[in-house]
Length: 113
Image 1: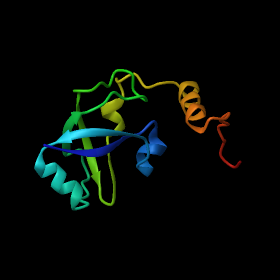
Image 2: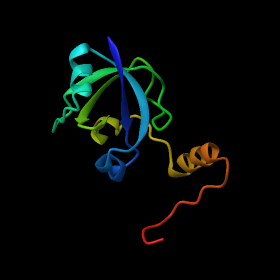
Image 3: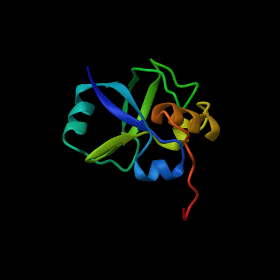
């Protein structure tokens, strides 16, 4: 067994860009090899066991099985469809987390700002 970092996108924009909450996933050696080789897949072919609780998704806990897409040089990403029923936090909660990390007030920018 090995570990890779996988992103949990918050929304469609994050999914498309490959951004999101980074979590550790325990995977079999063949999936780790694909990750190390920067493989790209068009479907969620990777699978593994979440090694920590999610912050973005309240019902996604350590020990849960994830499916994810390999994104080449970028981190693997979990498809949004898989995350739909996992209890995503609100935008206000997300902004609060960002504020805690930045240690200052966080202002959400709108398109064009």
